[in-house]
Amino acid sequence: MPKISNVVVKQKRDDGTYDTIKPMPNIVREKFNLFLKALRRKSVAWDRDLACESVGIKPWHIHKWIKQYPELKKRLEIAEEGIKDWGEKRLRDFMAQDNKVGMVATIFYLKTKAQDRGYSEQIQFTGTVENKYPKEMLEAVTNAAKYGNSRPMINVTPNSKRLTNGEDD
Image (cartoon, rainbow, N blue to C red):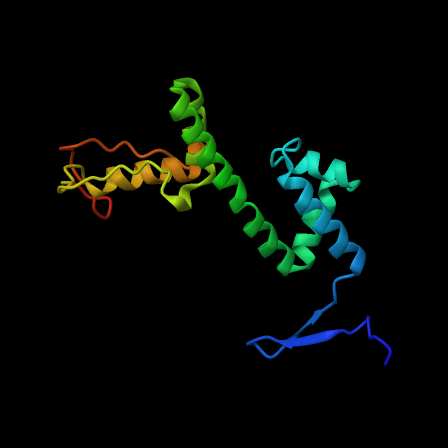
């Protein structure tokens, strides 16, 4: 029985329209598998550009393929869990060597890449915040932050008279 290779699947969305899902070409699957293997190599050390270069593809190919084929994105996310494992292993190695510079650098790396594993700093605040400034002042500060200097400034200071309908109270 001949193998069908150019099957186009139509997937129905919730709004009633259809998405056309193209099958992934074999060359893309093979190159992506080689890319994932190269990414794990010690000489590449999880550098995407070096992995692409070693496979003979451009980095934009990976981004294009991930956008076109969501299953590749999931596979890359799973593979990149390995870099988090590698970072944790390096941290343990530096701890065993009592290498403080290596530990600090690795902790910084893990705080940026492995936040889902608990490597993050969170500041917790408990208590109450009292607002002692008038509403107009807070709105002026908010508008200044939001729009910059493109809006007219309102001079609002604490304990000043509030303007209502253009009349003084």
